[in-house]
Every structure is written in structure tokens, then in C-alpha cells.
Image (cartoon, rainbow, N blue to C red; front, side):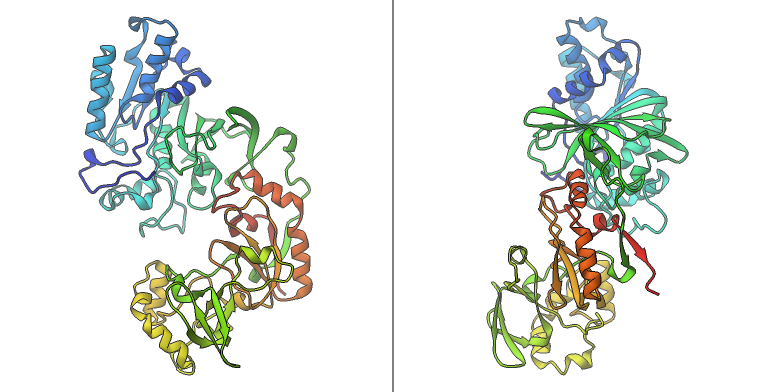
Length: 509
């Protein structure tokens, strides 16, 4: 499910509007002892309360325990909601169902503009949405907050508006820093990408805001349970503690077959790495593992990215015409004649099942062997290729993206992404990087090309190096490590960034 995004005023915005069912809110109350802490005088604050379900769960939990309403310390419940409609619904619910008039305890404001306050507990389900998907005007207003709260590092650029960093990360950082008392705790329903994915959320895993550290104390992973309906985001419930350093491993409970399975979680290589999740019996994951030694030019890579024009460059039928030319077809075109020297077999899942791979797809690459696009004068020598590209010029020129725009500015509108001299190295060790639960790298020769995020590969110059690296990659502990990241079956199964953690760059001298 994707949240609705509009360009309305801030108090009407619908950002990551996924509300917590009372059943699961009460689960959090039970697991973390929130009710008793509340009864003992703890103040509890929800910074993005929506319709107030989390705060309501403390009341419903108390009522189920037989507590009379008048005994419940409702004056210690505090909430804020930016969307006026949700805010008014919450106030109406508390008054009509429980006779509570929250008064100044509830505010209708953008949490990022709310004056600081200090509470014993933050109980929250912050908006689940990437920065890139926020309304444009709102993005512009808040982008500096990502720098302020340490979520954008040096050399990173949020200004382009394309960051995949979670908006929830910003809410959590501010809530812990500015709204928790010393040693206070935050109980948060959150996207697990903040803890488990490489990339944009790495800075969140410093587990600190400025000089203020906070620790993870426990994680519940709801796995495939439809807590919030049919949403694709991986989510969980996490307890953080302010002013404490992380002590790994931490307890990681995962819902499997309607029961909670206890695991432990910790980063394996670096403190800000995604967490690896394993049973306690496998806590020594990758012990005595020696990194795979490769040269810098053999770094793991993704494959070819056409910028949304696969039907221009990818084909599923091939026929020899003569010594120099072949005919190619796909769903969009039939019998396109192109030079054989610019046509390469494209790896698919089929080739991993065959002892000797037989091509079932092909890719047209208007490129030199040094990895650079053909120059205009070189393209003139490939009249068939030039004619075909000109037929698709308008479409190719409309492709978007920073890197693609750079190519356009240099007049190379036929260029692709993910191609360099390494694309034509004599050997490639290729593996399926998307949607798998097994890590099975395989050696291919230089003509085979790799398809975007579906596969990844290590380009190698010599056969001896290729065989050595392949043997190391087949170490069963690598598959065990990948499985510990709980990304099997997803697009993040074995992308290059995960394999790069397993290698050591050696000098090419």
C-alpha cells in the first residue's frame, strides 16, 4: 500500500498514513511494561499520533485489567498530530468514548516545528515514507532537518530530492534527542529498512544524535504478519534507550508460524552495517572468515541499466543474417538488423541452471571495448545501428536521472548506465542478486552481460584469479551471512554492496 501524497497545506498533508491497530498497540504495551510504568507516574508522548490509537491502547489495556477510568493517569498522556482531520478525530474519540478532554496535552502541529519537551517514554508509529516520495513543497521545507539530526553525512546530497532515506528516521532522531528525558525509552513501530538495509539509512545506524547516543534494547520483527494490512514495507517494533551505547548482540524476536522465534542481532563487519539476525547457536557467524582479496577494478558491480528503455536494447529472439549482422526481436520490435559486434548475450535465470549456458536474451550495446559510448564518428561506421538509434532518439532523450542527464549533456543520448571497461573483462563471476534464497555464483566469459539489479558480478582479468575468487565466494558461510540479513526473496538479496563487505582491496602493483 502506498500512502496518499498531496500538495495541500501542512495541516492537511497525508504522509505515511498507516495507523496502528489497537491489538498490536496493546501488544507493545504488554511486552514493554508500559502500562505499569504509566501507572507509576511515567509521562508518555506520541509525536505523530494520527487518530490516537497508541495512546488509546494504554486506556483499553487498563480497562481490560479491570481498572476504573478514574484511576488511570490520563493527564500523563501527551500527543501531537500535524493533520488537522486526524487530530480532531483523536480528540473526539477520547472525549466521546472515555470522557477525556486532553486540553493542552494534545497539539496540532508539524512535529518538526514543535517546541521541545521532555517525557519519560516516547510511544510512536512515525510516518513510513521515503524522502523522495514526500510532497515537493514539504521536502524543500524540511530537508535541512536531515542534516541537523545527523542523517546526511559528508558528501551526501539530499538537495537532489532523490534520497531513499526514511522520513521515519528523522522523526525518531528528533523524538529521542528533543523529547526524551535522560535515559528515557522510545517504543517505536518502524520500517525495518532502517536497521536491515544498506544504503540511504546507514547514518541512522550511528545510533546517536550529535553527542547523544541511544541503544537498541529489543526488536520484534512481524515478518509476513499483516499488522498494518497488505503493505509491502518490512516493519517491526523496536525499543530504544537514550544516553546508552549499543551493546550487541541484541534480542531479535521474529514472528514465524504464529509464534515468536528468538534470535540475536548485530552488525557483522562495521558498527553501522545492517543487522545480521541468527539463532543464538550461530552467534559466531563468519568467525575466522578471511576477506576475499581482489583488485579495485574487480569490485562487485550491478549490470546494465537502460533508464527504462529495455525494449530498445534488450531482445529475446536472435537470428544470424550473415557474418557481420543479426536480426533481433522482442515484444515491441521484430527483425531489427544490427551488427553482431554490438550484440551480446544477456544473463537470465536460465543460465544458472545450465552447465554450458545457452543465451535466451541479448543486449545491444553501442559501446567501445574501453567502456565508453561510441563516438558519433564511430557510430557513422555502423549504419544499421545508427539508423535504429535514430528511430528511438526522442524516447532515449527523455530518460531521466542525474547520471543519464550528464550523458545527454555530452551529446551521448544513446548511452546506458552500468557500463565501463569492466563490462568487457575476459571473465565475470555472476550471481543472482534479486529474489533468491541461495547464493550460487557462476563463471561466465567476457561476452556475457549482466542485467541491472537482477544479477551482480565481479569482473576479472585472468582465469586463475577468476577461479580463486569463485572458490572463495562458494564458501557456505557467505550464504549463511546473506541469509542472516533476512533479505531472501527480495530485491536486496545479494546486491553488490553486501558482497563488498566480504572483500579486501589489494594493490594492483
